[in-house]
Length: 70
Image (cartoon, rainbow, N blue to C red):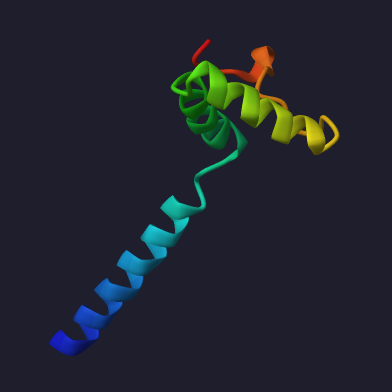
């Protein structure tokens, strides 16, 4: 019986961990990206902007409406 309870607890713990890992959504990723972009030097920003521009403008670091940290 103790083994059953231990296994059940382990399964529940794993399930809860997976649910938490899936909680990262678009806004969460945008927040992390905005913080990282803010901490870049001007030269690094220019390089990153050039890379993003080469992707055809599909990704932009200047999406102010969705930037959660301003």
